[in-house]
Every structure is written in structure tokens, then in C-alpha cells.
Image (cartoon, rainbow, N blue to C red; front, top):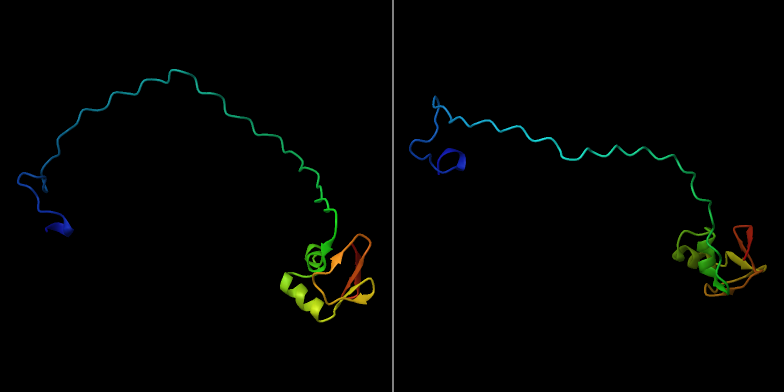
Amino acid sequence: MGRRGLPPRAPGSYKAGMTLPQHEPRPPEPPPLEPEPPEPQPLEPQPPPPYEPEPLREGPIRLDQFLKLKGKVHSGGEAKHKIQAGEILVNGEVETRRGRKLARGDKVTVEGVTVEV
């Protein structure tokens, strides 16, 4: 291998002082056949669509799922620990079953705050 990992030069290759062959200039490009379409106008700002909360599903919901849905806990694990520690009241009574089914009208108390299902 020769210069910087390149193969050796062939005899008569370009070296210092040699001139490169001259190429003919390219002919100018012909003009486009069709006129370019006008630039699109910026759209008027649209107001955001109205917020529609997700409709609550019908039927019972598990206690741990309800706590997560209402943002009273950050995870199912946190819900499990709070429920098993007796920190959750359902209809005024301590509830230790995280699978407890809640129905409309049930009242759940977490850290002194009561939320109705």
C-alpha cells in the first residue's frame, strides 16, 4: 500500500505540476415547462376542539382501579399498600380488599378526602 492506505499511483497519473484535462462547460438547463404552483397560504389558527371527558363506563369498578382513575394513588402497588394498611374507607368503613367492587353512589375516603363514585 502506498499513500495513506491507497494503492500506488499508476504511471502517468497526475502529480504536482501536471495540469488536469479541461472539460467542456455544461449547456444551460432549459426552463421548466409548467409554471410553478403558488406557495400555499398559511392556515388561520383554529381553536382547539372542545374537551370531552371520557364517559364513565357503566357497571362496577374495582377499588384499586378507582383510586388510580381519580389520581389518589400513582400506581396499583401504591393502591394495594394503602388498602391493605386500612387507609381507605368505603361508605365510612375500613376496606382491605382491593378487588372490592364499587357501584354508583359509593363514597370512598382517602387521606380525609371523600369522593363519590
